[in-house]
Image (tube, rainbow, N blue to C red; front, side, top):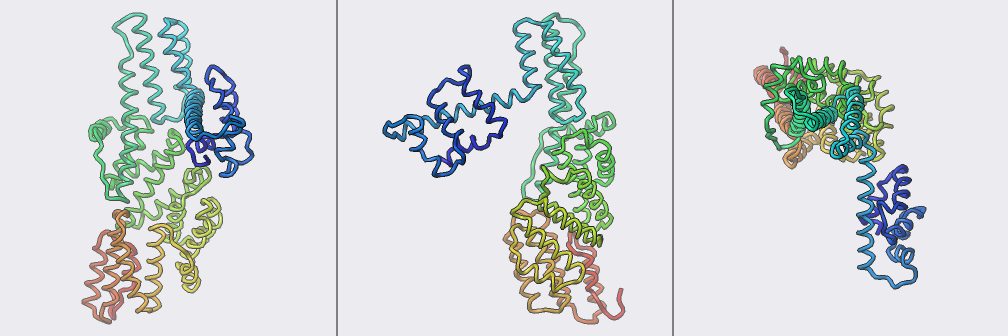
Length: 470
């Protein structure tokens, strides 16, 4: 019974929902199934819901007393009770949505021909929506719903040449544009780490419209428009507009969407960085700092392990060692418990590696277990560089072979695969480079400069040595 859909949904209720659910069960208006009420009484009065305390036979005797246990009847009761609980969850969350509740009231008043009352309620609700400072898709949808109600009200009272169709079209278009652009941006981000591409209906029409009306579009729509252009075309000008607009208008969006935009802007920087544009390391670092300072980078007080690792990566690239160490110690506490210790230790190993303390870095890396692909890639890259710099050729040769096989087995890392495969190819050529062969060295260095995309370009270039130098 502990794994049943009934108990799983029951356990998902918070304290406020449980309090109202008890009242709901007492109301014959909503619920009149006596045996379900007794079953919920059994659940509500258990101190802990375990496999033992939730045995079906125990629940049966609480509901039916000494009657012999019938499994089919118990299953039927659990299904009926599950329907009751589902209905409550739906009703509770509908009543928790003030706009939806008042919108439904106005529609009912119109149907009952109580037009003056409906108009007054409409004006009050419209003032509430107009006062909203967060202009998300939900805000534009509420505006559309209100204008649709007003059209219905006006049409019920009299048909005139004057109407609010323009407002209906505007709010409908705003809702459609922001939703389409937002999910188009998410689709682009997803395509970067997978082999999936998405066709977005009418997206080009939106882009064409905004290219002509950019300055007149609501700021929240502009934010997603600039983000899409930056991600889709690696558009530097669009990124500059996004960065400026984000600093000014980010509060127009819910915190979750602010987080999405911040990560997308950072991903733009990282992609530019991976193609050799070093200035974007500082851009990404500034965005990460902004996200930390304004609590956008964290969600419900939690920082994702991927963002944690990326913050450290950029900080190390800029050699902000003190800041990075402080960040690791402070924000590792904001990681989920399952990752807290391993990500603290792994990123501290990365710091020690960049600081040149290879003994400490190797010791930390060899005892860690790698639980995600990018974690693994970073660790392998560090080991390659340490083996090379300490001239551990046999260990390096084995590692490069193993690294190449690892990449071949991975199909969900998108363009990152090519980044690392290019690195491995050039690393092998570096090992095989004849000493003091100026011509071969110049050719290899030229190849390193031209290869796109490429991880650790600067490190590779630094290793190419010959007598005259270049």
